[in-house]
Length: 268
Length: 272
Image (cartoon, each protein chain N blue to C red):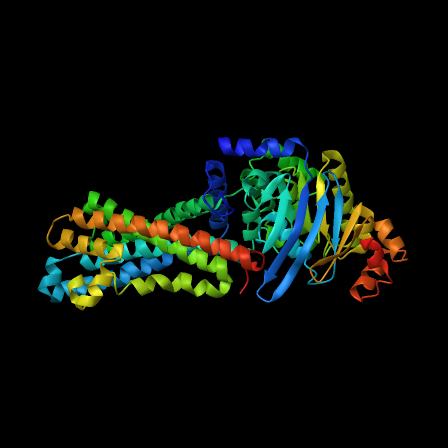
């Protein structure tokens, strides 16, 4: 590890004030003629779990990608752990991680080989012990020496989660973390995420279409529609505003334009 | 410092991690290993017998023994060097793993350095047996070229990396739809680099183009060594200077294409 890496892993002046985990300010992304993200702003405090909801094409994935620095904003500003993204990404990339259905782990490599490589990329100290701990926590031991391509969808998701946790990130970005999982495994993953947040005071931002998951995990929900923030509050407050008992009903109301005055109320 | 510029503090550990990743991949797949050996062996056997036939029937080629086989071996260093670089890069595209890498602390320069090391490893696996075949079957010992061989090798590998870096940037920006460029771009250089014939054969205006390519100097230098028994160090230095410009330009192009890929979101899709 270089001196620069050591510097990146230490809290810096920008962190010393314990700035918000994520600050998004008037963020815009335009792809040719399409405004995928249209001037959104939000701030996520450290230690929070926030759900990013919205239909297909609402701008969730683009928003997460801009926070990660994989997509450059057209305009607006993103700060992660007190550092400007993507300009200062070198200072924070080692302290965050992500899981997304848009990326895979190399298929021919075994689970252990994959975790070893990502552990080295993230300069994880005591890597062998860390992999052993993750294998124990995420129940990977039965297939840890099997090629990733030969795993079931549920096993792959657990491996992807292990990769996302390899560096014990302060900030975890998850895009559909329980997609394609059976209810039992999905519930088990959610329990693990809750435990991880609690034990590490980690910040989690997750995009999901699973409303029960969001209700259970998130202490805040940001609803997006056509690249804009449609609503932003606690799950209970949003359900009360829409006069609904589940987030799924709220989601359908937003998707079908039945805001019943809730949007105006949210604006107040 | 921007998101895609070369960062200070290159990490040997991260470069090592990437090399380990490609090594695991290579060792997990015997067809990948076999392919590295197969094409160079086929090349040398075909061209070796052609050289034997010509040597038996032409005085000039009999005197210039080894120019054809030497050219085949040096061309393979150039071509396989670029493929070794680019295929390792393509493995990330095929595996949809680029997002994981770009989101990690791995820096673009570290990624490219690991691809360079892998091109050397893949080249060694393919070309060393090829040179042994040339020695056993056709009594051509490329290692007898001595120190000039190192100059030839360095210039060819630098060119192969420049091309590899540039085409990797194109694939990064345009997705796997641009994959065919990886396999074909080097062949565009082939007629101009004067691998099997001297530059003087080309029309005068095309000779200017040929002399802008570092491999031309290498193949001219090889012929001078085998036919006239003289090592043209001036040619090697000229090639080195052009290679330095090409390497810097290809790095610049890669960073620009990476930035463009981040602008249009192709790092997330990475498909066709």
